[in-house]
Length: 296
Image 1: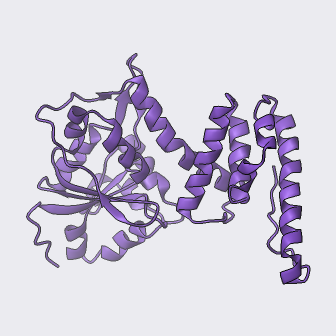
Image 2: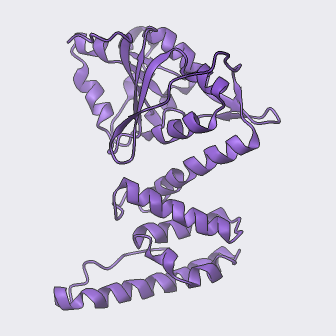
């Protein structure tokens, strides 16, 4: 295998925190016993949650490509994997990416930036200033991310002549945009966890659209209760977004009492389930296997 790449080496940046059943515990090995093709981005004390940088050519040369593919194929779509082409070696690139582990808000408070998540990377490429994006992507000749559709899409190249200092300081508008881009995925993950990994209706694109729509409805109502958004997101996912088209939702979202909201939401979901069951009775001869189970 030969890269034949004028942009340098090809690397995979993998969000270890998004891996489900695939173990990446060898990233926690002592540095001297760690594969040469693997470089964690976080410091040694935080290896369990560190993004992983993989040198594809180096892994191939020692016969470890199957280990890399297990990481890459751990979930579909592969939002946990982006592809980097750079003239830097793996140590230099890991050091560079390590400069962006943290960001600052306008008051100087420090936050962790999970930029190995392709959904976050897509947002960063749009919301960072040209100087900030140049600081992050400058040494990278080409950076390609996975979309929820499964497509591989290149991020825009750095264009600014000057680069921002690190850690990057984001203003309130940037932080809000980053939050809006990240939260639907976070709530989908929470719903899956709450339902013990049970498969949800729809594909990744549809699920994200339903979660986004739930968040828009919650925000439009001026509701500030995250638990209410959680249960609304769950109901939106389990009803393929249908619950958000019910007029009653606007009334429910003025509530701030979580138990009252859950009770009213359950009634509405039961009504939707009954309507779906009646609609399919003729074709299924009473088979209600398409009913939507929901526990809220």
